[in-house]
Length: 184
Ligand code: OFO
Image (tube, rainbow, N blue to C red; front, side, top):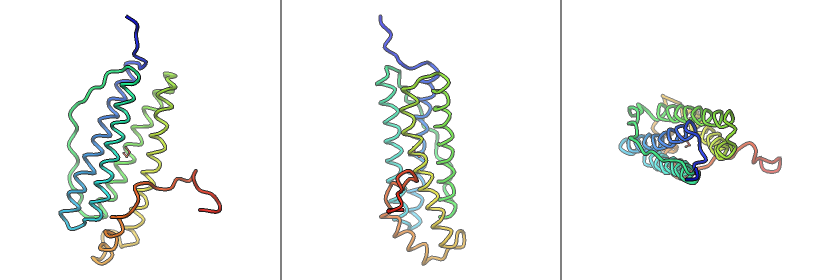
């Protein structure tokens, strides 16, 4: 029979692994969202829950890509999220850390596809490179906000406005490559 699998063994393993990583990211946002809500921060919870959905979408994109390239999808157990944050400041620091971790994982798959000259996978993964840049920016914006609010020492009133703010904060951050002089 003709071989219709367009993915190498190593690439398909890396993609399956990345798929689970995205599911894991989703679980992390879900658990931090629940933590925020039970501590009275409904706006921050809303933001984190929306983000959990985004990560779930990333997982689906990779699943679809594997299937469309004729590879085998392996759905495995998702590792448990790490312990809950200890404060809003700590929560945002953890969020940034998770995004950087995931960027590192994405870069590994990109590097692998380059080494194997699998240009379809390389091209597919560029979407994730851009998405991670955006999500790191979003996480850095959170860190900026909490810093202004006082970091670990943030007063209740500033946390209150931060919480209200985040309920309506868009899911996407503007990327440098989309900026013009007219609209910085
Ligand atoms: Fe999947 O983008 Fe964040 O981690």
